[in-house]
Length: 131
Image (cartoon, rainbow, N blue to C red; front, side, top):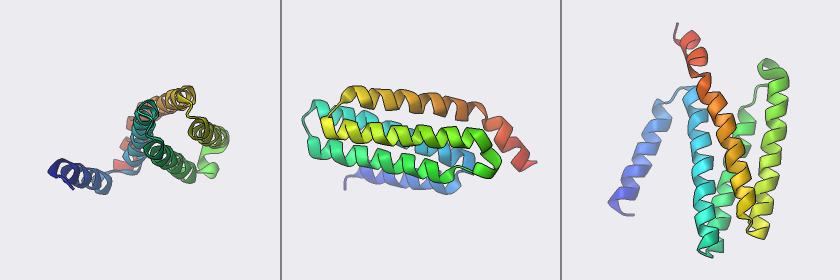
C-alpha cells in the first residue's frame, strides 16, 4: 500500500471515530456518491470487475443507511426513505447488470438530494444533543 492510500485510510478512520451520529450519515452519503462516481469511470474504462466491486459497495452503504432509519421517530419520512433506498439499490443492481451509466447518474442525483436535506438539518439535530 502506498503512502497516499495509507494516509487516506487513517484519515477516514479518524473521521469515523471522531464523528457524531449525524456526521456518520453524512460520511455514508459521501462514500456512496464516491463509489458511484468511481463506478462510472470503471464502466467507461471497460473495467467491469472494478465497476462491480464499486457498485456492490455503494449498495452496501445504502443498505447501511436503511439500517439507520428510525421508524418510531421518523414516521412517514422514514418509510419514504426506506422505499427510496430500496429503489436506489434496485437501480444500482440494474446499472451493474447492464453497465448503465444513466442509472448510476440517477441514483447519484437522488442521493445528492437526500444528502442536501440531511446536511440542511445539521444545526437542528446537533445543537439539541450538545445542550
